[in-house]
Length: 88
Image (cartoon, rainbow, N blue to C red; front, side, top):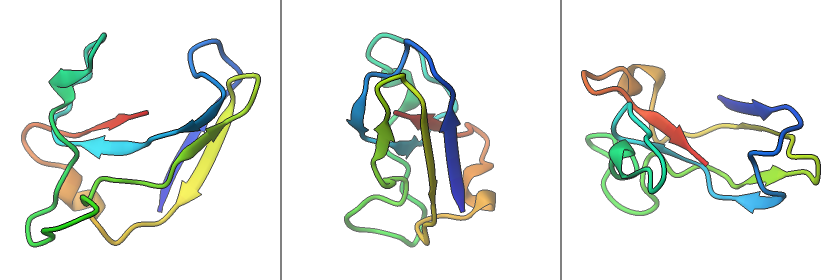
C-alpha cells in the first residue's frame, strides 16, 4: 500500500497530477532529472513501469490524499543503493 498525503499549501497546483516512483533517491529542481527515470523493478518488464502510480487529485487549497496499492514493486525493491524518490 502506498499513501501520499499533503496538507493545504501553495506548492501543489489543483487538479490531477501524475505520481511516480523514480529510480534515484535525489530530486533537485527545476527539471527534477536527478530523480532518474520511472522505477522499473527487475523481472517486471513492460508498460506501465513498476513505479507508475495512480494520479493524485490536488484540491483547490493544495491538499491531497491518495491511498493506493501496486504489485509493481515491494518496499524491499525500493531500498537499493541509490534509493528512490516519489515525484508528483
